[in-house]
Structure formats: structure tokens, C-alpha cells
Image (cartoon, rainbow, N blue to C red):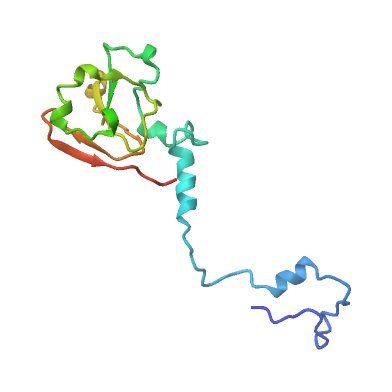
Length: 180
């Protein structure tokens, strides 16, 4: 620590006039430049916001960094004309429950499957408190299997949902991840 103070009459080396401001050199002498006991204060939002720039679909650096290491190939049914059904695809169908009802699995599957309509990534469904049923069918290209790729389905509907097996057994409950 530095013991110097400005305009100290007992210090002949430091006789500044009152109307003169101290120089940067004087400030550097005044204040310690090294902190031997820093205190870390984590700010989680800074880290998550920075990470999102690299991994979110609309992130500033999405095409530059992380996704190219973990996303080798993907299907996007928002562009139906570009899908080759022979090599691989994802088919998404939807059925809205009428009049805000909450039907059971056995009331919908298989009885209502012929009423399911094709939908695409980016479509909206609502109102928020209504029930919507989705059927997802996909074919993984043989080349992905041969190369040992891990295949994942990213489902971000910003809601609560349940995944069922074809026989009605619940497999996984999901809820919206509110990190915004």
C-alpha cells in the first residue's frame, strides 16, 4: 500500500496547487495495483447469456463454434420439400383436443389417429391451457447408424408434456425450461 496523500504540506515532493488536478502517475502511486485477496462474485446470467450466443438457434456465434462439434446432421421438417423419405425423415402430426378437454390416452390412440394433421416446426398451437396430441415418426438414415451417431430428438414446445409408448405406457414427463 502507498502512504502518499495529495497536497500533504509535510511532503515536499508532493506540493500540488489546489487548482491543479493530480496526474495519472500520482493516482497510480496513491492506489494499490495488486489485490492479494480478490473476492469472486459469480453472476450466472452472464455465463448463460454468453453460452447461448454459441448454442441457440438465433445465437450470434451459432454457426462458428459449438454446434459443429455436436450436430453432425439434422432433419428439419419446416422445409418439407427438402426431405428425402428414402434416406431419412421426421414426420410430425397433430390433433387438438376439442373444447379444452383433457382426453386419456385410450380415448385418443388409436381412435383419433386418422384425424391427426401434418404440422411443421415453427407452427403454433393454443390456447396455452388446451391439450394437443402429437404423433412423431422418423427414419434414421443407415449411414448414421453405421457411423455410430447418437440420435436425439430436440422438443422445445415451451409447455408441459408426456411421452407415451405405443401401448399407452408413460415414458417421460417434460416441462418447459424457463432460462430466459
